[in-house]
Length: 243
Image 1 (cartoon, rainbow, N blue to C red):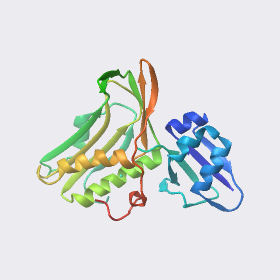
Image 2 (image 1 turned 30 degrees about the vertical axis):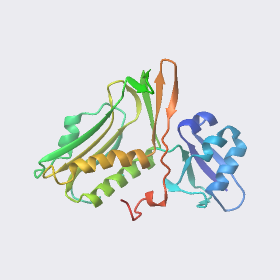
Image 3 (image 1 turned 45 degrees about the vertical axis):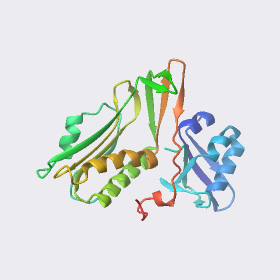
Image 4 (image 1 turned 90 degrees about the vertical axis):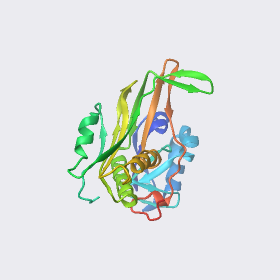
């Protein structure tokens, strides 16, 4: 059987390619066995692949999950309903217009909008040392990222039913110092109807389950910035038990 492999961030760099096909015997295998076969072909991936997150056909997958002929298996490092209200979940390659986004999630009954905007820092103080950043390069596993952004939006609606419009927009590509990296905006009839809490939840949750990474380019070199959150079965689309 043939499996289509997608690699992101550090894994892509180590393998020298973002896409490859893996041929295995039999009609099905497991995610764990796919990892073993992939390392056999690309030994440099072993350490990073051991800690990598897997997705099969754009949904989180785990070691014993079955992989079948023709499946698409992605590996990447740790890192969103039908409400009738406006909802935007998108990846953007151009700078964001904050006023336009706010207008797009505002309805006649809206009295409050809470916005979180991430920015590219030019300086970061790390253990007393000042680190300079020239620019960032953002990469996303795009089909899955959009699906998980919609999942985040649905989780917001489940927890804060009085929230009206929701916007979750992630920039991709090269971003210069001072540019927006991400925008989370939630509207409601009044400020005490969840818009603050929902926006905070949105950015925190995005950082957990939406497969997006950044490469930091500095005067002295560059490196991928990887997270440490490892998804569980509760992070699958439609899973119950979200906090």
